[in-house]
Amino acid sequence: MAEVVLSAVEKSFGGTVVLKPTDLAIADGEFVVLVGPSGSGKSTLLRLIAGLEEVSAGTIAIGGKDVTAASPSNRGIAMVFQSYALYPHLSVYENLAFALRLARLTKDEIDRRVRGAAEILAITDLLARKPRALSGGQRQRVAIGRAIVREPKVFLFDEPLSNLDAALRVSMRYEFARLHKQLGTTMIYVTHDQVEAMTLADRIVVLANGGIEQIGSPLALYEHPANLFVAGFIGSPKINLLAATVVEASAERAVLTLAGGERFEALVDAARAQVGDTVILGIRPEQLRVADGANSVGVEVRFVEELGGVTFAYVDAGETGMTVQLPGGTHLSMGDKIRLQADAAAAYLFDADGIAFARHGAEQRRKSASAAL
Image (cartoon, rainbow, N blue to C red):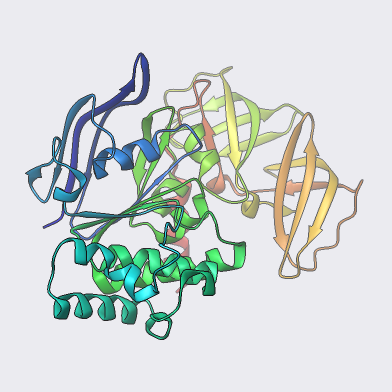
C-alpha cells in the first residue's frame, strides 16, 4: 500500500507561514495534482512529502508508516524535478543505473531495472547516447526513468513539463497518463497549469496562499467550484464574472439584475440570499452564444481570434470584459454590437465574500443529456 496521509501539516520559515495546517489523504494508486499560482504552497507541500523540507508541525505517513522524521531515501519515494539534472558525461544507461549502483544492487538487477524502465518509456534505442544528443522530451523521459528504476511506492513530480514547448507538453501529458495506467503507482504532481491538472488528475488539490481551497475530481471542480478563486482558476478560457443584484431568491433559483439593467436567471440554491444583495454571476465562455431573448446581455466586440475550429471573441459588457467561445466560422468584427445568451442552468453564482451558491444546472444538463440518448 502507498497511501499518503498528511495530518495537520504546517510549514513556516521564521515568522512567515508558507503552509497553513493541512490535512490530505491520497489513496494507493491515485494520481493527485497539486495546482495553484506561484506562492500558493504547492511545491512546499511536495517537498515536505519528499522529506526535502522539515515540517513545522503535523505528521506525514506513507504506506501506513510515519515518515515525518525519515530521510528522503527512507520514504519509498522518487522525485522528478523541473530540471532534468542528468549527468552529461554519462550515457542514458549509466544515468539510469547510477543510483542503483550506489545502492549496491547486483549487475543483473541493475540491468533488469534499467532495461525495464527504458522499455516502458520507449527509450531503449537511446541507452548508449549522452544527454547532449537527446531532445528535451527524451531528456525528460530519462529523468522519469531514473525515478522508475528505484521502484518507489510514490512518484513525486515538480512541474516536470514547464521547460518543454507547447506541442511537446501535450504529448508528454499523454505519456504521464499512460505511465500511471501502466504502473498503477501513487503519483503526486505539482503544476501551475490547470490544463495539465484537468487532463491528468484523478483528483485535483487547489491551493492558494498556503492553504487548500478545494479538493475534487476535475469535473467536480469545474462544475461545482467552492468559491470565486477555484472558479477562476479551473477552466480555460477563464470564467466570465459580472456584478449583479438579487431581485428574487429561493432554493430553486435566483433572479438577478445586471449592471446594464438586463435580468438574468440562475438555477442555484439561493435560499441564503436576500433581495438587494450584491452578487457575482459567472458564465463560462463556452456556454455563451450569439442570440437575443431571455438571459442575454448586450456587448460590443473588441477583438476576434479565428482559430479554425473555434472562434474567440473578446467583448465589453458595460465596464466588464468577457470572453466568448464560439464555433469556428462565426463571423464577427471589431465594433459589432451583439447580444450574448446563456441558459439559466449554465450559471454560477457567488456571494459578496466569493462563496459559491450550490448549482442545480450541472445535474439538469446531465439528466437532459441522458434522456437524449
